[in-house]
Length: 203
Image (cartoon, rainbow, N blue to C red; front, side, top):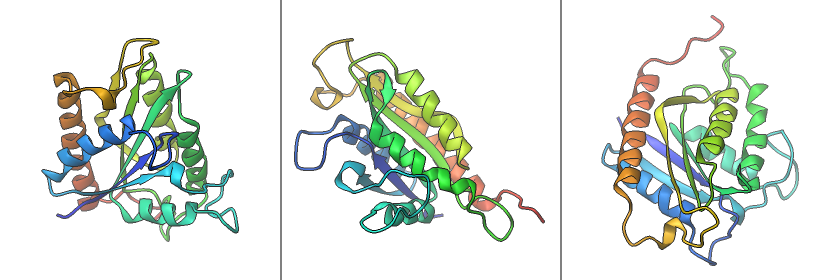
């Protein structure tokens, strides 16, 4: 079964600048999922004009509709975010706000268009807050129709108020590798089950 994943990198940095720790974590997850035959496309949200709002199309110049379609074309969504001020990035919140539209968008059986897709979370930062951030994103993704596997978060946090970022590490800590492998294994397994056994609809 060939599964597809879409990874949303919610770093505040546009491409071409400083390396992104979020990108490094998402790459580790993509590599782990590739072992199970999953093809992952990564989108850096800061490169796009994602307008504020809670609909699927906020008009001229809005880049969200094409990103939304990639999400719906995939079996797995991975949302990766840095921690800023103890919170998920504003970029990640913008994407979640736009997915709020799924609450009103249903298929012919009355299911949210996002049903049948499995989500996972990646978090990086050099301050405390990884559990808080993953909890916020877990809840938001579940609200808008995604299914979440056990242990579906991989994170790294450095020393509080420190200057070392995940992207700066020469070696990935074993605990992070273990978490990444568990996230990939459980998320892919659940995605396969969901494809084979879709959620029931109104009929």
